[in-house]
Length: 397
Image (cartoon, rainbow, N blue to C red; front, side, top):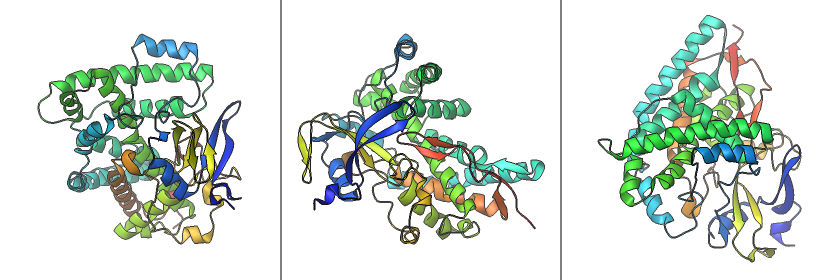
């Protein structure tokens, strides 16, 4: 039997989507097959990775056109020979030494956020950990790491979620129009920031990209998705980790997560089973093969990087269907969750560090809490997932 088309559904044409807006993909689940796709960019192009899942209608497009919104392929969706040089520039801001040096700053932000959460819990009796501890530290860290000014954080968080929905969700025409206005505002803000950064003193990512020869639209394109992916996905990873800890569907308890080892174990468990980025897309650049399976040119490929609801055969949350063997592998490698090959996520180590530190400091500052809402609304886009809220109350004495 061909292992790539076994009953487990390693490669299977499926319809994934929401409501009437459904998009056909060839879903690839087998880790070896996923890795094979990621390591063959000439055969499986990243050109579709940032294309809107739901085609944008005229009213939304006109809103974007009015601000000259443009997202030329630069990094994640770039399948040309310019990719390597651009990636090298960006990687210079995410070196192991740079990330390691950020830990004291991350811990300070985490402790401040956890204290604020504890104060709010004490005064009101409940607190949402997504907004108080998960949302803002990753945004601050990302901007500081890139040498950019830390400002407009509330707007940035809103723009990030709206853009995720616009490009990876299934909004109807009316919702598209709302999201397009948000995306346009973000783009105008970003273009001003790029212009400012070109002449700002010191080192920053946008200035470095300009010196590398990128145009303003190219810098804006890279910045648009980096300022979303570089912090919103980490917020979502933290949110899911806190939720699973408090719900009890994890190999680590809340008190254990207050330790360095416990928090790292839990974060790696979530990365392996239910990451904030469960899938990613590729498109067949020409007729090719994946194992013994023929993949026609233009085929839309959906790679399953980690457990998720969208491609789950049962349609249930992954945490409800994993077996005990999966739960015992909590400290295993996150595997392919950050991708592999020439487009692997440059912020992988930073995201893991931030999540572990923030989870640890939150668990240490809030002992004895319990979930107020065990069934919150979730973000469920094609390639992003997390609970929108993690509201907690004081536990019984």
